[in-house]
Image (cartoon, rainbow, N blue to C red; front, side):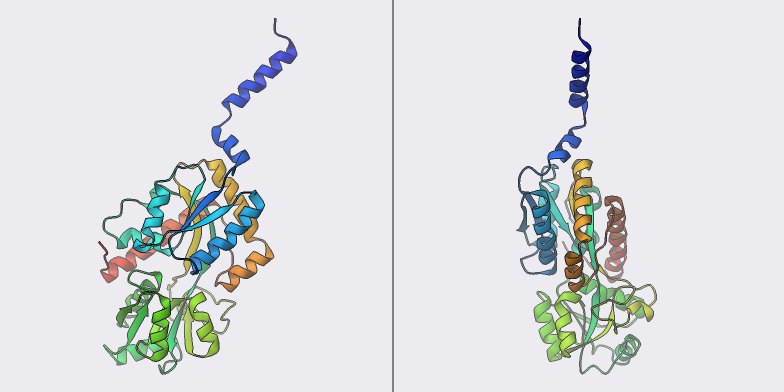
Length: 324
């Protein structure tokens, strides 16, 4: 005969045994360091944002979120390494514009980010800045469009490399305005900006963090930001969409994990990251880096990833760009 107390104990044990494994994992997660893979060298915008949020996650969750820089193949090496990792929440991917662009730019990718990566949380959107050499006579986007059309073959568009968001922001501009320029790719933003200052190239659609100091010092001139609204960093610079309706080319940053990562772990990370994004110090720092925090659910971030992938696909295909 089983006593009432024993029966209650057996029921409790049975309930524990049948509880979802993911729930138990999420309760304790993380119990060891978490690897956060960034597809670029240290010091860039992705690395800075990753370390900023990773440090706060380490403090809040009591385990180190270790940034692992894995550059190469336009961010594809980093992405593939995470896709092939165990889906246990201990390997994360810093998601950035290359993930959306590469889906159509590369012809032989072994993965599909929308299919193979589970979105966790977005961080922020950072606009690019349409920036010209100070000797370019145009003071507004409309004047620049007219200047390019009046000087066919004479205006050079700089970028930080073929297929980058900097490059494709310029390609989108050309496609939507009919203002044709010669694209000049560089190995990174620094040499591109050096030649822009020197006058060898005339315009760049660069990431705000890298070009902002040159604009504020007067070395270069900003004509427009590529977000749909004005930004706190450059309040007097209009959005390009005021001149080119429908133009938008901000860089969406966030974090994901291998597909099949337990939903409870994804939900826990999303809640923690969203709490961090709401902290005044973090909000201020992200705003300094070019974009206010973007607090979303994993599902909302996933929809944004799909929308960005489709948007850049149209630009890549329209410009006839391909990388083997």
